[in-house]
Length: 562
Image 1 (cartoon, rainbow, N blue to C red):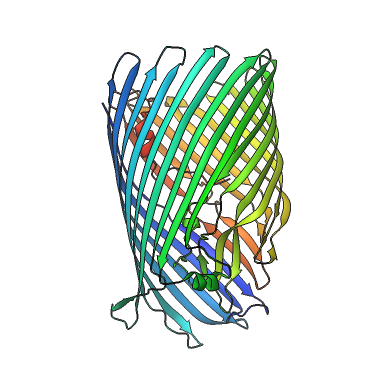
Image 2: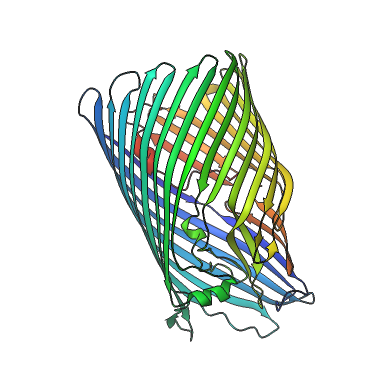
């Protein structure tokens, strides 16, 4: 029997800055709008799981786990907006969004394993059911600090949102080794997920808390994603060559229904292109994987690989109803989004010495119907809308060089450098969004064992500037530090870490369009300090039970995207 219980409490402030200058091609009432955004987040959560492994025989067992998680989060977003006409600040507003969220979820899982022998011949089966419910209450208010143009007053808003999600997972895997050099694998995986978002927006039309439902924006979004796959893999060694051949047959079903007072014609008028509010898309495809390794020596080899993948849009990328944090900068999903498909080839070289390992590769990736976020100035207004769309293709060609150096038992250094050229081709609503440029990124990590057996780890990531489909993106640097110490005969571990040590993890970009130019900054999470204490009862430090690993995915983890 086993149990893992955890509690978390942390705040995660963020910020944003948007400076938009409209030109003569725009119908905006204002020449310039500056929006300064501050985001305060307070996250509190509790999770626990209880499991038992029962041995059916010396070779087989079944493990059952129940996982429960609850959370109470409070997010406050404050937008201070200044509006200019002919260089004069004629309007200043303060918009505040207060969002309270309660999350309750539970998961039940069963895991079966049968080891036919000690050589790796085995059968495993997995079943999981998860139910999640999130309730959100959001209050929006906006006040005017300065008004020289008799601007209409903003009506206070209240948003009541309930999101329920159910997910089933079935998976079975069979492994059959033929000998030391050959192995066959086959399996099935089915993931069935449904989420329903009930969104109700009300406005205080006469003041004093007399809210009336806005039926145009109130909606129910029912989204289903079912993915089933049959897959097989065979690996063998012939002399100095090793082969790994895999094939996956995958069926994807994406189904969505949007119930609202707005018709498809009205949504089309809002977006400027046809919107499908009741879609049912099926995709059946083969996804091969081929890896070949040629051994030049005991510590040296060349690899050649190919794989095909699918990238599916998530629910919030599809829901077409806009975000409400800002009146000037909004995000809207696109129900017309289709999955993107990619093919990737790589040629690699690896060489090991006593304390040094060198890895290198050159690669080519081609993705069709790739997702790109497009900004648009809503005609006749000062609203900048961001929507995801499928562009025709995205090509990337590059090379990567990595070094792993272990000069001593107490020191481990790891670094990589990736340089690539990318090219995007595609049109949307008659506008060409093609772009071609080069960029690069680099990673570095080190692990040092200090006196008193204190582990010190450093992770750094830098992404170089690049040309985007509507402008440019500046370079981006993030550095994380962590210290940990085992206590009480290794039964406990005390850790301290700093995320984004220099507080430099903000994304800066310049957007150029026919109607406006914009400079923007966005920092999802500012520099943060985290302390954690883990105590283990009757458990080794490196022991990881599968159920706890799958269930405990709170917001303390996650890296900046690269």
